[in-house]
Image 1 (cartoon, rainbow, N blue to C red):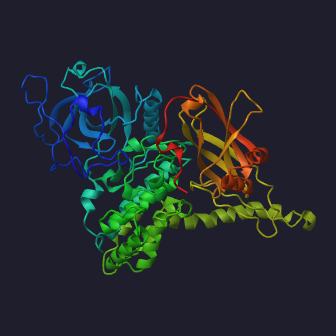
Image 2: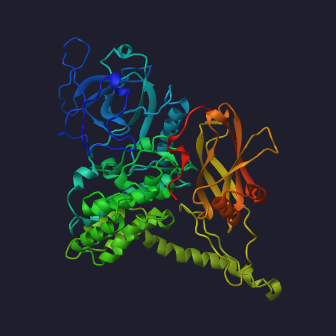
Image 3: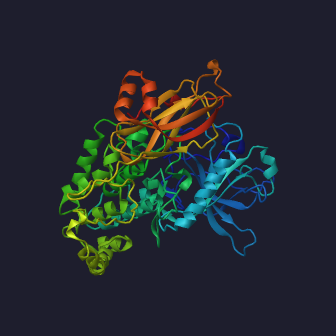
Length: 582
């Protein structure tokens, strides 16, 4: 990782010398020994801090804050440059008796950002995520306190000297400690460290499960989208803490204008189309890649590199066998389930996967199992809790039988052969497993398709093309298509696009697709359009996708599920919304 000095305010508004598609972060946080990134005020009286090295926890002479308090945060030590911006440790005092440590991240303006970036809706999104994280109360993820616009970093009292351009900052909890990368890079797991390393993976899995939980999040499941060793801090008391929530998004968020990612920890479908909305399975892949790192001490090869899957499997197998795992094939296979190239085959319950990971490791031959035991006590779904569950469930069954048996005995034999079927409470699985009628049961009525367009919202602006995403519940043989039309012409032409991976959609699912809104030469800019989400027979969709004809048939056979209206503005999106994910 290459560090560089913090640029002067004018330079901060420009591009970045790293690939804008990548989001890199430094390997250490709150530690010394790296090249200086921030200037320090030498007291020269010129109002311009020098570029001398700054020891950790020492003020560097620069301040940031909102318009109401431009010197609210005093920046410390060496900033840390990443693909999205620069992060400093900072001190907030306000009216407090003693300053408090926080992390302040200056977000780098995207290279293709429009004037006025970010819009008010983007700032509100970050503030919403701060509220969401406080609601979740997850021990192993950093807290997001605020998002604000303010002057570029400046000496105290000189905010007005930085010009009229404003910067965007996120204020987060400062978590002290080395990153997972700094702690484990270049070293492999052995009998003495296996339990501790897998415990780190288990804590990340628990955090991702909490973020993804519809119940726990109050209906706001989210993705971290940048799980990697450099974004994991090892705290002395809290254990592993997942940091840098600037990439956090709700699971139904749409087009990603930046598309930043770290190749070794990115799912193959995201590597193929980084701007498309991401599914929960993408974070699962990142978790599997993190497990590979914790075991091997190395980054896995990017999923789209030649022979990546075979190299990952062979390396994992060799490392776990050398670590004395009783059944190395079992542990290797378990990790590889999260790294499956097919998103649909990756685990959907991360807590169960985490428990299975620890169980597959077993007690290392010739080593102590105390580390693994400690990890299991950290895990809310550990064997210790399963013991309580195992004792409680039989008691509950006895109570249920006592209640149900009298009702069953009062049924007459002529009441039919259907059995009562208990329904289980909703779980936090990413996608529910379909159930089939059991023998003797009456088949359920055909499922009526339902669907929702989550992004873009109704009345949004769109460019020459736009990605759409949402959720749906589909019966067998039915898929989805997007229809575009002129809202002022009921009988006018309709332009059809089947959604991405239309042949793979099943049951309750998320979906992504794209629609196109004409070129400037066609006079499309300034027009309004209606976009309908249609449930269509998969055979009709297949004929349309293969031939490009019979769009009328597809419209006539479709069931309208949802509608949004959009307004065409000038501009294009990268790759013209061409889906390369297959």
